[in-house]
Each structure stands twice: as structure tokens, then as C-alpha cells.
Image 1 (cartoon, rainbow, N blue to C red):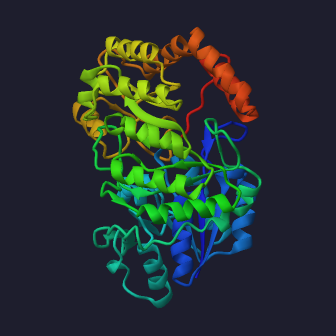
Image 2: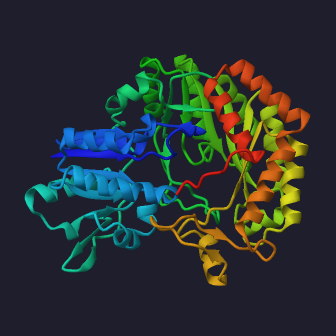
Length: 468
């Protein structure tokens, strides 16, 4: 069966994004399809910023039997248009939707996307080849784990999704994205070198933060030897900058140290970015990571108020966040920090606590954003129960949902507070000088163009766009 997997465009035409990474989830699916004897194709509309006309022509050219589209909550309108486009370009083709949003609300998603034939939830390396076989042979669709489809006017649900064995999944079929790699379309504002690549060494997350919907909660980790073998293959393709995209790479210290040791032993000569919680980032990891090539660690610090951290069920302390900043500085590693404004219980005083914490501890970067209440997260349910969930996740909505607070009855109040907080942080001498150094040492025109774009927004010279 000929299967086309599409990565939708995540930004508007002409807009510069913070990062554009390979659609690794789709490349994993493609590898599993290929292993099962099917013919996979991957169309990365995001990497090339493809117009609707180009996507339409590509679908017609490939003429797939089955088309799959990744669905993210922020881009529902784009996916809706893409689904319509796919059906017009190949009317005979079956259309399947998957990804985080489809997994969170599969029945709602099937209702909202009338052109979709199937919703496939969770990690689909096993279930997608099963679906292809069932379509080809006429087998019962009801037996496929995680599948939702319509039958006689009703929605039919297959058995519960089953997590695939991470040791049995083939490496992602990155040859299907060869042109994007060659043209250096994958980038991040934080990278040192191009071209860049990404890698998953584990799946799932054992934690349950209130704002995060992670359907891969069942944590499973690959063997260090397998990880380093894939890294060597990435290196052999000329890649010198890799982001390890695990939700928290350092959750198992012994395993992370084993991977670092093997990287040094194999002399891979690759620069790395990793993600970590502050409570599991130790001096031993910082020292070994630096030796292995880690130059940036992304931390979800989220708030400078312990009260809000506790409300988020983050299970970290302010002291641990401060220690993570200290350790990264000690070993010459950049600490990229993320912060959420507007969680239920937030007040102007707790936002002030966050700004003061950032200015005191000085992580290398601070990314502040107003809370997005993703479907089926605790934050979403809390706001819905209290009547403070404003708007809905819909492909026809003009704005994304937000959470109303007693002191913020209009989202503009939260947006303005977030913008003022960003100004207070980045217009200080420390952060202005740090950004200038990054511009000079990075020699990254994408970074420069993005900085101009975002500065215009912060200064009110350019209207912010919604990414739904």
C-alpha cells in the first residue's frame, strides 16, 4: 500500500519560527510501514513552508492509497484545510489523523473533521501497519488497537492502544526527508551548527504536570548502546548538532551517564541539546554531559512561585531551579528555561515572583508564555469545572482557548502582562549583552530575523498572530 504522511505547516507564510525539526514521529511510522512491506512517503510542508497549491500537486503526484496527517491543537484550522485538500487531490484515498490532539480527544476530532476516515491514537508503529493490512485484506477494523472510525452513523472504537516495544521499533526513515536535510531546512535558534537533527532515546514521562498532556506516560528507555549507534549513523550523515528530544533525558541518571560515557568513548564529536527536570539534574550529569558535548539543557522551571509550582503538580522547588542555573553556569552549559503565566491560582504577585526569580538566577534564556489549556490536562479540567475555560479547541475557532482568572477577565490582560515581563527581562543589560554575544558567535541570520520579528511584536510594531 502507498502511504503518504504529511507534516502540516505550523506557521503562517512569511513568518519565522523558533525552530523547525524533522518530523521524527512520521519518520518512525514510515520505517515501520516499510518494514511491513508498504511504500511510505513523507511530505514535510512545515520544513519548506509549502503553499496549498504545492501540497495539492504533491498529493496528486504521489497518488496515495492512505494519507496520514499529524494533528496538533495549535494548528487545527490548518489541518482542517489540509484534510479537505488531501481529499480533493486524491478522492479515492483514505484519510487518517493522528498525533497529540487526535489522541487526546479522538471522538471529538472525528466529529470535527468530517473528511477523516480514521483516527489512530497513541504511538502507531504497530497499529498503522495493522490498519494498512486490514484495508488491503478486508479484515475487521474493530480489532485494531487505538483506532476510531465511523460505521452506520456511529463511532466505533477499537481495543485500547498498546505501547510498542522501543527495542523493536526500527530507526526513523530519515532518507525520506533527505532533501530537507540537504537544504538545511531544519533549524533552531539555539543551535551552534547546521545541519541539525533530533533523536529520541526514550518515550513517555513518569511525571504528571498539570498543564502537560503527554499520552506517552508509560516511560520506556532504549539501551545506551542502541542510542549511540544511531548517533554514530547521524554523525556519518554529516550532522554535528543533535537535540535529544526525550521529555526528560536525565530521569535515569545511570543510563544518561552511560550514554555520555559511550559518546566520549566513540569520539562522536557532536554537540548536544537535552531536556531535563531541575530535580534530576545533578553535578555528575553536568560534568559528564559537558565532556560528551552538551552545550544546552532545556528546563521547564515554569514559575518563580512555589505556590504555583505546587498547584501545577510540578513536584520541584525553587531551590532546585536555582541550583540548575548554578550548575549549568559552573560547567559552561546554557540553561534554556520555560515559564508559564496564567495557571489557575496565578496572581500579578506570583508573576512578579517569576520575573524576579529569572533576574536573580539568570538562566541563559527565558521563554515566557501564557498558559494554553490543552484538552484532557488537569489545567483544562480545572478551568472547565470552574467555568473559567474560555473558548474551545476547534478548527473553526478564531482564537485558542485560555483560562480566565479573577483579575484577568480579558485575555489581553494576560498577554500584556507576559509582554511586559519579557521586556523587563530582555531589556536588562545582562540579557541584552548575552543576546548580542549569541548574535556575534552564532552568525545566524535566522536568529537575527526572528529577533527583529519578535521585537516588533513586543514593542507593539507588529500584530501577534494566533497559531491555531
